[in-house]
Length: 393
Image (cartoon, rainbow, N blue to C red):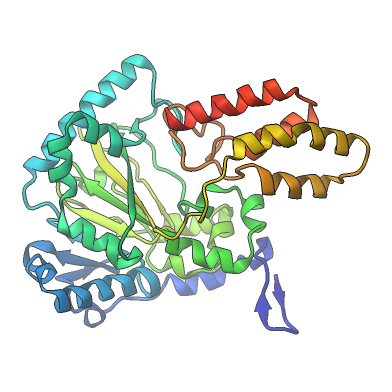
C-alpha cells in the first residue's frame, strides 16, 4: 500500500505484488567486471575459486575487499555467491557425512526428526540442530569442519563478527520432489497474512539478520536437484508476500537457474532470494547438504525476562478483566504481547517441530488460549513447562 500524497510505503499487501516489476528486476545480468574476485559468472551467479582466494583471506586489506564484494553481491546484485572448493580437504566432509548418516539411521528408527518445513514428513531425511548433534558426537570432526576460513568469511561478509551458526542437514533421496519457491527465515516462515502485519521497513531489514548457506556433501549434478535460484529476486521489496502468489511462483519456475556442485563446494545467499530445492530425478544420488543458517549478533533483547512466571501470574487477571469487559480483544492482545514470548524461535525442532506449518506454537499462543478457555494457573504452568521442555530438549 503506497501513500501517494506522502511518498512512502507503510505496509505491503497483495496489491503491492507487481509481477511485471518482479520480472524486470530479475532480468538483470551480472557482468564479470562487477565481481573482479570471481573466477567466472555462471547464470548470473559469481563463482569464487577458494583455492586461489585462500591466501587473500590471510591478508587483512585484501580480505576486506573480497568480503565487501561478497556483501555487495548478496545485497545489491545477484544475491548469491558460490564458493568452489570451500573445503580443500573433502575427508572432513566425508567424516561429517558418516556422522550425519548415523544420526539419520538412529532417528529414523526412533521416529524422531519427522517434521519438515516444506516436504511431507518422511519424504527426505532431515536432521534438526545438526550443529549441536555433530559437535557432541564428534567434537574433533566438528572443529575441523567449522574451522573453515572460507565459511567464516562468507558469514562475516553479510553479518559482521559475533554471528551465531545453526545447521540442519537435508538428504533428498532419488525421486524426492522439488520445493515451491520461497524466501527464508524470518518473514519467510510467516504466512502471507502474518507477513502483511509487519511494516514495509521490517520486510526490508529482515534479510540483514540472517544468511543462508549450503555445504555440498556429495557431487550434485543438476539431475540430483541442487537448489533452484532466481538471481536478483531479493531486490523485490514485496517478496515476502509475493512468494505466496501463484503468478510469481510460476514465473520462478520459468526463470530459475541451477548450478551443479561438487563435494566441498558451498553456496551462500540472501534469505530474501527466491529459491527452492530441486527435484532429485537421479537414479542413485542421495543428495546431502548441510544447510547453514547464520544469525546476526544484533537480533537479541537486552534483558533476560522470566516470561513464563509473568504469564502464570497475570493469567487470573487477564481472565477476569476480559470476562467483565475491562479488556477488549485488542487490549488483551497488547497485554499478552508485553507478557509472553510471541515468537516461537529459537526452539528444538526435533521435539517442537513445525508440523502443520512453518512455525511451532509460541508462549503467547498458549497464554491467549488459556485466557479464552479460562484455564487454571496450574494448567497454564504445565503447558508452558511442556513448551520449555520441547524447546530446550
